[in-house]
Image (cartoon, rainbow, N blue to C red):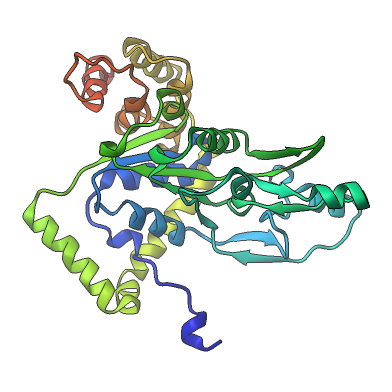
Length: 351
């Protein structure tokens, strides 16, 4: 294979993306704290959804994995190891490690459950008594990003499996009384065009955040976007090099935010205010409260703070709640605007 063939396909730099701040913020916060629960991005065609998602994956620092392991097992964290690696560690076998780019896995619309979850070789298990497992996309996505374009057109059953794995961090495959379980902790990112249909509310509710993006209307901004894209298409390496310093700064900010996150605190007064907003909006369940708390902490950490303040909550709460409101067919107001109105009424900054 020659040098040109072996080179990875160039990825548009995240810091070169103009506008779409809501989408970029949602992705950054999910990368800082994957337990937020992923992000659903709904918007017009040609607004840079796929480009931005691939760009954030390319930006992330490399991760350390066990060599020749199908599940990107962590060398030290037990909750991110496959059972096979755990057994080898318990037997004190020395395992080699390597650093790889954060996995970015695309789930095609026509994917089957076997392709997603993996398959067990029943014949081999019965004849030889050996568990033989062919890993699926959920195995490849462990410790990375799993992206589903047009998620609103994906079979509800597959969306359910995706959301279960994203929430629990594990994938279990059962066939004919044989069961295999492996780690599958990833940031789930779905995108779609609302004109092509919505997700069922109970599935939508399980996404941590919901970003809405629209086509840029400002002519000057549109020209700038076209210019940046044209430069990249004409000479990708030159464009990547021009933004390398900004990319490195942002990468450092993400790493520091991840390290700072466990020590971020949120005052009880602010917790009560978050729950008051959720209660006033008649949000079902407590996912909205939990995700808003997590997102506010992640944003405070990204801003290099030690404690969450009211502005941090205001910045993230619409992203966390807009998709959890009950649909009223007689109401014309946008759900994001409705959240913002209630937030402005309740979240008065203390002097």
